[in-house]
Length: 199
Length: 129
Image (tube, rainbow over all chains, first blue to last red; front, side, top):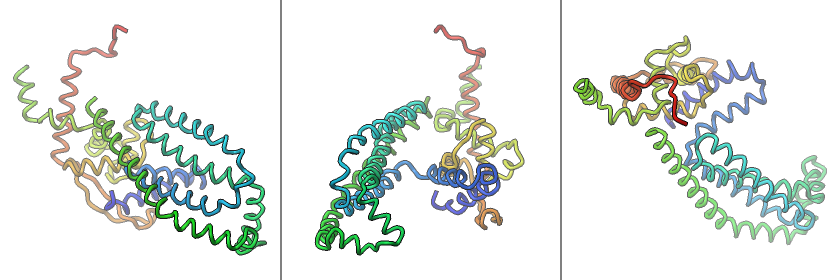
């Protein structure tokens, strides 16, 4: 599909400008465009994409860890519930489409994304300290350097060093996991397609 | 009757071609044989997608259509050529598709196989359950 990239994007742009944008508005039309682009991604590519996302999120989370360690232990109870709901919804949707083999893989991917988002949003988003300091940085009242002053330059530097030390391990581990899940998903998809063709 | 069926099996190579042509692939090939809409007659990616949606009476994703076209081209059932772009496409070219002789043979084969399968069965089918 790589050689068709330009014609495909042209087709999507044409549909977007002539039909979707006038009828759905900009926000929903943009969502439609993103959905169409996502449908072009081959099954085996989803694993590495999710893995890269999880990797960046984990690295980000690890880097910011000192800001949210004291205040936000309670929200951890929400993780299993959120992941359980996500797993259930995707498994049900997949089985409705007669793609039961895909259910586990899709649910695992959604759980990975949900877990990562939950970690960031619940751990740091609800943390009073983090919110206060990040708001200051975002609105320009504080500089990033003042964050370093607040939490101590030595501690901050140590965190950077630790992150750099752990990064290769995270990188290799997450990419291997992603590649493996992508390969499994692609294999199961192929088996499913062959079954449907023969049916 | 039996001889005729055997001959057709040999001529169209039904056992190989029909097995490898899914419903969606049939829809895409049929669009290229006989489009029902004005846009469909243009035979490029978006036109084929719209025509398939029209025939199947349900929305389909761009990924499904382009992946199918790629697969059919790899099998030698369709061929394609780049055409000029338009301003609304940001100048990007159109890829026009055309059905090949092997594609027509495959469609005939799958239709023959399906007709033989359904021969003598009245609709709607009534089961014992």
